[in-house]
Image 1 (cartoon, rainbow, N blue to C red):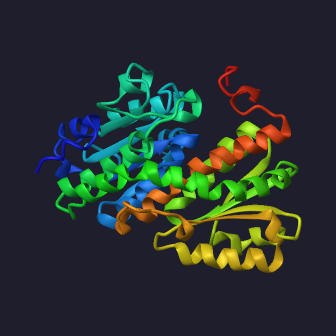
Image 2: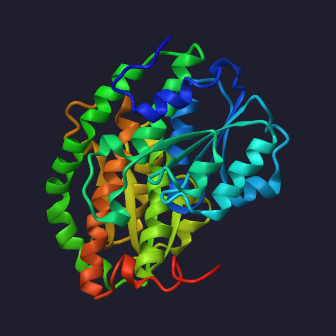
Length: 333
């Protein structure tokens, strides 16, 4: 079968360059914010294919050296700039094992792009400041890789449905920005005063919670944070909850939503509503996004809208976002 013309050309080229049915294991490998998209990618693959898969931090991928990594493996890597040393090293390592590698990056001339077998480009507004259409985001590209692989390996063919949904994503994000703006205006002054802000989510949304915690709150605002899985919350972390503690909870639309609902109930039972920011996908206008993919696409809506919330916090704290970093991209480490 062939992939639709509406698919990204890089994805079509990558998936058409090897025998998809020979793939027996998929590895999703990256660091930091790029690693965060690997969680929902695996979640999507788990939903639609019996193919086994794993998510790895790039450095640990090399250090651990999975025995299952071989010529029948597909390794999907991502680095926004393509200059992440650990991710490039992971690509080199995978190729020594005979695996097929696909690298996602915004720079087709980057070290990662030169190392992998196949390059898939995407656009990112977070470091450039230039707005994009979400259909060109890293989420969109990796979801196309996943669902294309599912279809090419004999699984359900939902690629047209995925594309239709992805095309409706940016309008949904724009509507969510408007709908959530009053809540962000309300919460920003209180959250700007916090030294610790926890993020909570599960399923497809966990990656967005992880990225917002480590790459935005910690990296760009020096606010202590931790991404807590909505069910793991009840296995230790809930002991920090009191009326003063701040949480951001993402309530998605995938099969794990009940876990987030349970966390929501407990947070409001023992915490203070004014310190609990809840993003509820059920309250968003997701017109045009097929119900089969709403759970997978709302994490990008969550993260995109929270990015704007982060800038409100930054303004109130008088702490620059990207420019204020002490170490990232500024020293050798």
